[in-house]
Image 1 (cartoon, rainbow, N blue to C red):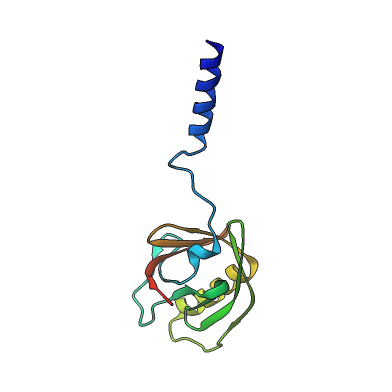
Image 2 (cartoon, one colour):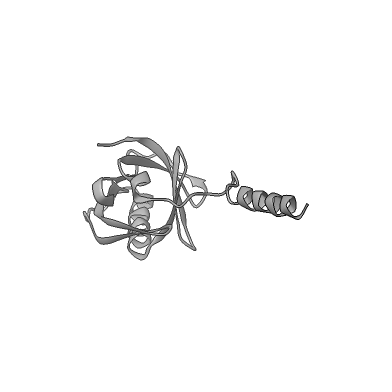
Length: 141
């Protein structure tokens, strides 16, 4: 009887380790070759704009994208935090004030580090103050 109890306890313990709601650790390979378009900022839908803010992940986690200006740099993933070292961007003034604000926001988030999560169709960048939610646009080479 003790053997069956120990076996049952072990089975229950192992089953708890594979709970469907448990998220697996995000890897750089899961981000590479994906392009996302910004859909919401802090839960509010992005106003229709002539530009579609986006972010893409290339080989070796090279990050590039645009809000008003284009940005690029070398991404590093530490656990679930994405940081971009040596981030560079163009410096044009946009006629849309909201896109100018988003330029500053994405720059701060990526240089200081943002929690990143990914599902099949979305990508979320989050700090203690802001959340950017992107929708999958397509796969890039």
